Amino acid sequence: MLKNKLTASVLVLGMLLAAPAAKALDLSFAMHTSPPGPEFQAVDKFVELVKERSKGEINVKIFHSAVLGGERDNLEQLTVNEVQMTLFGDTLPNVVAPPYAATVVPFVFPGPEEIFEFWASSAGAEGKKLIKDKAKLDLVAFFRRGDRHLSAKKPIKTPDDLKGLKLRVPEIPSWVRVWSELGARPTPVAWPEVFSGLQMGVIEAQENPCFNINQAKLYEVQSHLIYTAHVPAVWHWTISSRFLDSLSPALREAVVSSAVDAAKYGDEITKQQIDGVCNALVEKNKMTAIKVDRAPFIAKARPAIDELSKNWAPSVVQAVSKYLK
Image 1 (tube, rainbow, N blue to C red):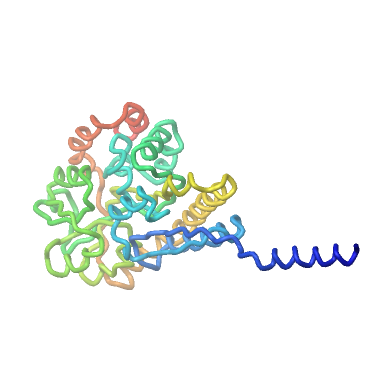
Image 2 (cartoon, rainbow, N blue to C red; image 1 turned 90 degrees about the horizontal axis):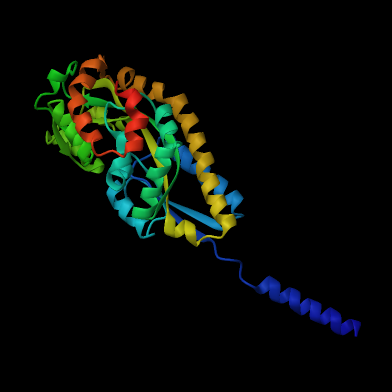
């Protein structure tokens, strides 16, 4: 009898050892920017955290440098769960939730902290719900990218200097409207084509955080860095709802909590590095820095902002009214 029990135990143990381990779930992470940059350190932190918290059940595959396309491509991919996660710049709220996109309209919000506060408010909760209902996306975390500034092939000191300027902007209607009001000629160009567009004269200027200007080596084709701080840019950490809803509660918590904590890490890294990156564009890469008086730019942009605000949700108008006095 004892011999039979031992034999049975050995057989069961052998079957358990021979059984294949649970297959890890692949999570494709699309990034439209190129390294280096704080967003890559944040994503590396996410990979580390989610591996630990999921006990190895989530396998992250990173596709950077726009190999899966730009932000609009990534938006379509996330909606149908071809890609599971990305960091959106300013495209997401503008394209999916225009009534809640005041955070990315130029010359409205004074800084990133105010944007974080907005998304944590009841108005922000409404915006997140609209994004989930409309595009099947969960917007779970945010962290700063650095203020968006102009770069150009000539000095820009006042709004008058923008007249007729071929300015590359993302394909965002509100941005086209504001920069048109300021006198520029907004020219949408996909981010991967900006360097060549500047080089060939298709566009004369562009606007981005210092990290992006540095990553893309735009200092090779632009001579001036103009500190306009027209949008205090933030990253929008976004997950495909179809993917998230397919997970067990434990894995869902592992993914979301890892994203939230990695975003906090990315925010701290950005705060530590941003001034140094902007300064290096001037000191190392010999761009000429111009610090403008923002008041004339804000005043001239105001008619466009007032027009755009007519399409904002009432809760958004109330939330941002203190910044538009």
